[in-house]
View 1 (cartoon, protein in one colour):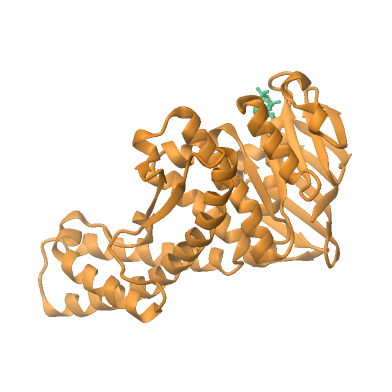
View 2: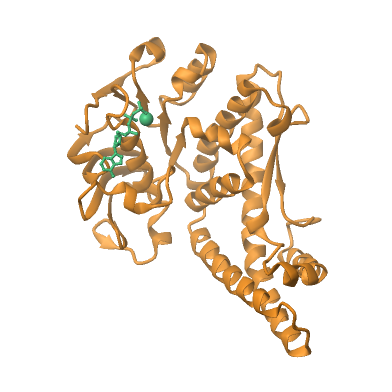
Length: 368
Ligand code: ATP
Ligand code: MG
């Protein structure tokens, strides 16, 4: 798939712009603070209805304006597709081929993107919540129902937490029956999330190891391991995972009531990365951690292709300059003929131009 055209209105520092993209490589070039990342971000938001940089939609609307609009014309294997996204201070509206989609899960997935930005190092170095957010954003693109399931889980989690808080200091049979209902609900909903995450990581691992081995000329083996909040023997059988979830909740009952919060479930998940069997978060060098993050991102490209049947769009924010020539070449050569790519840079000297077949260059200057 590729983006043919796009329009922005009142998005960040852009008043009104239109651009026609090359199906291959597009480069946004300009000094700092001109709006290069804002452009990449707008493509990401068009795809996922959320920014990779902020949770607050309000920040995406140009200062002193009411609403931001992002529009895109896509070319997909089965034909053209038009996306319209409007963001206001009170919410957002998404249209697919002119028809409003009440459920965002029907909209997300129409455009697939993989973004690689300097802050992606946090997937390896950062906190578990960063990794969970990464997982959720990526899974949402591949399994459209996931967004809805995640929303359900979060609702149940909030209600169960509230219930636990009320139980502090109480002990009677009726509250036990009520807690059992909450346990059933959270275990059923949480099991679905955990299964999706486990499957996703399993597939991602295969591609990431393959790519990582290529980048490091076979010197490094990369493993990605799913670490749920309780140990699960096998994820193949949903009812088994559910049973183990229930057992763990029973074990943790006293502690959960004492602390007034749910201690078991996918909201406590984590992922670990191992380079040659050593944990990358603790033992990896800066370069190894960066390469790990890159391998994971490139693996996503292949995974989306495998699951969706088309390659996603690749967004590279300021990352070429951070990679050495070999890694840059590897990146460009692998994907340029099959993946539409948008690159930001402050200067072309950091881009290995000899390896680029054909690129369209856009000069970005204070929001135009
Ligand atoms: P760098 O090379 O430093 O990464 P950049 O070209 O990627 O720069 P952007 O991150 O795209 O720069 O930001 C450009 C400018 O957009 C910033 O200076 C910021 O002040 C401005 N900006 C951010 N949000 C808004 C908004 N909601 N309304 C108007 N301007 C905004
Ligand atoms: Mg930038």
